Image (tube, rainbow, N blue to C red):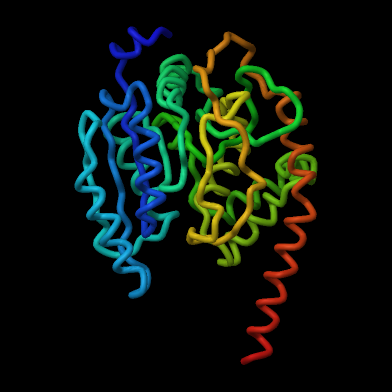
Length: 311
């Protein structure tokens, strides 16, 4: 789809979820404004309230910045009166926009986009609007070592710069217990975990146990168990700048940082099937993360043990 024809299509609204990081939010918005379709796009910003008193000033700083944002077709700010938490805020916001507009592009306050991000998202949303097999479009791609196709499909869904239609989001299952039971019954835990290389099943168990509150693992599991596909770009259109100990789920790493697309992504016609090449590249990338993941689990376990001993 050409740039001129993009202006004629019904562009998807953008949902941006923010909390207490004014600098990250500003960088995210500034990158989004560099996108060719930003001036024709409606932006909905969901600002969560402070979870604890020490976050209150940073939340106010974010909200002050939000009132100054210009350059989009419209800017609508939804200030949560109480703290929803990221999971509830995203589920509520995505549901609301999908009910009203039928589709949505979703970003969080620590995602820097390529200037071609909105073009790719909107083109894909139009191209695959009636394709029930496809549940979502993703903008981020892991920094894998193997060359990937221009675009490809994988089973499941993802969470760093994505889009979906109401028909896709309707498949979201809130209940992690149901998802885990269905996953066990399917016998596909190993495939779900990328041949055992990433602990998605463990994350789903942690959701059930209340150790995490993740909309993303439930979204991935919902899509996977419904046997739906997500479209990925071969080169990332998104970079996560939140792995700097600033987020709610704190962590500091450059493991997920890679090249960002400097040209438009071409939506090639292809068979609507999961890519063996893409799955293999992700699996091998996850394998390189295993020492780091094990180390993190050990540190977390030690903190829990120390806390228990202190009591």
